[in-house]
Image 1 (spheres, one colour):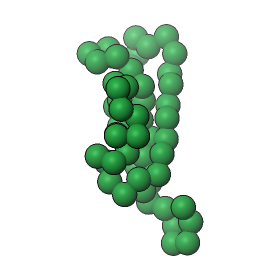
Image 2 (tube, rainbow, N blue to C red):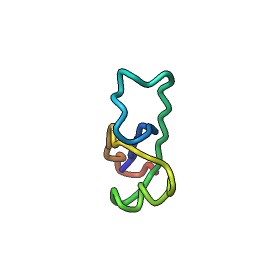
Image 3 (cartoon, rainbow, N blue to C red):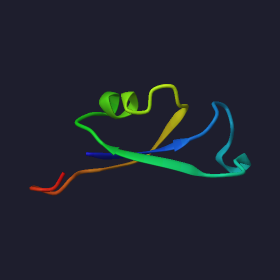
Length: 55
């Protein structure tokens, strides 16, 4: 799966963000994806399956 996260401070509404920052990664599950960005405050935006033979 490809996971995309929004980097944002906790308790801040998306409309109040002055800059939108997104990060993506390939991971087997959500826990593994979040651990790729340890220390960042993340909100899951999207997860997409990877087509057969792609990675």
